[in-house]
Structure formats: structure tokens, C-alpha cells
Length: 254
Image (cartoon, one colour):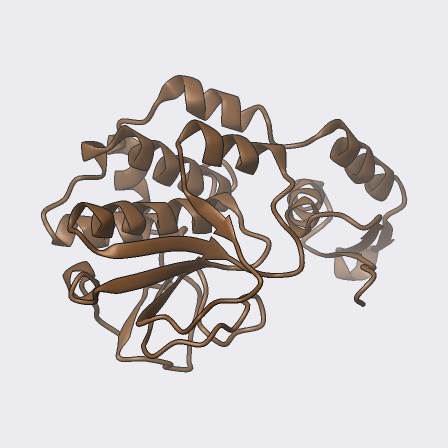
């Protein structure tokens, strides 16, 4: 896979789509590409679909503080170019909207090409790092826009377990050289959970099931944002004796 951002700017209109139940990494990556295309005169939107709107306080604060024009949509007229970020068009974690042409930027393993316009770098710790490299290839520094630098820095922070899982030199470059807004980053870092979500996480962790011979834990939580399941699993994996875990909740839809 090999793609340049300048190829996307050749389209008159582009819709950038985050995965359902967006996290900071997909929002940051989409916002950075949105800003790049907007500055080059492309008509562009930043959207996400799925069954639920964002509820996590840090993500709401992120979109407000950094003025990220993220739209929740349930239907979409056919786009000239639909770009999925931090996900692959047609996969289960992203609502499939109609599109004349599809493009992909991601950092997860992908063995199913869906377009000639794909940039998938599975060795990277975050999609934010991939986008930062794509911007650099076009001669654009992430630091040209403080909001973009802050978003990408926070996306990397959240997707690498607070920089504990940096996989690639590009991850370290973004961590070390992004000129982010310290006050906004601190606010985001300290707004990860609502009080209700903290209660859900605490209740779930009190009732874990554990198999010592497999160093394996299973936890059921009350219905919650999938990002909270990730938060609970990160805590579980920090426990001595737990190498693998499954954290789940039963939603009205299944």
C-alpha cells in the first residue's frame, strides 16, 4: 500500500470517516487530514456513524477545545471520495456508507485491499503517527497548527497506553517533537472518565473471573461506551498474573 495526501486533494469533495464509537486516535487522524485538505481548497467533511453519539467527556472536550468539526451521521449521500481513518472501509467497526471511490489510512493489520488508495502501516502504535508521516511527506509539519499537533499528540498518547507501547520511530518522533497545547492536553488527560463510568469500571473489576493456569481474566461490565471496556482491560492487564483478558457488556442490540 502506498498513498500520498496530495492524491486526495485532487478530488473536489472528500468525506473523512472515523470508526464507530470513535476514540481520540481516529478523531485526531481525521482532523489532521481534514485540516490539510481544507487548506488546499477541498470541500471536506469529518464524520462518524454507528448506533451511538460520543458520550465520553474527554472526547467531547477534545472536539470543543480544538474546534474539531466532527459530525454524527446516520445516512450519507454518495461521496466522491470516502476516506476511512484508523479503520478499513467495509470492516465491522465502521458503518458502510455509499461512495464512488474509497481511500484508507490505518495502522491495524489489513489483508484485504479495498482500494488503490490505501496507506496501512501496521507497525505503528497509532494512526496519528501514520498521518504525521503522511503530512511530512508533503512538506507539512504537524506544528503548523497547534490544534492539529495537540490532537495528534493526544491520539498517540491514548492509543499507546500513555506512551507505554510506542512501536515505531514515527511514534517517538510525534511524541518528542509535537508542539502541543499543554493546558488542553492536561485537561483531556484528566477527563477520561465520568463519575458514572468510574462506577461501572469499579463494579466490573470487583467481579472478575480468573483462571490461574491460563493467567486469563474475564469481566462483564454494565452497558457502557466500548472505550470504557478498553479502559477496564488496560487496568486488568496491569495486574500481576493477568496476561490475557476479555471484557464485555451486553447491549440492547446484542
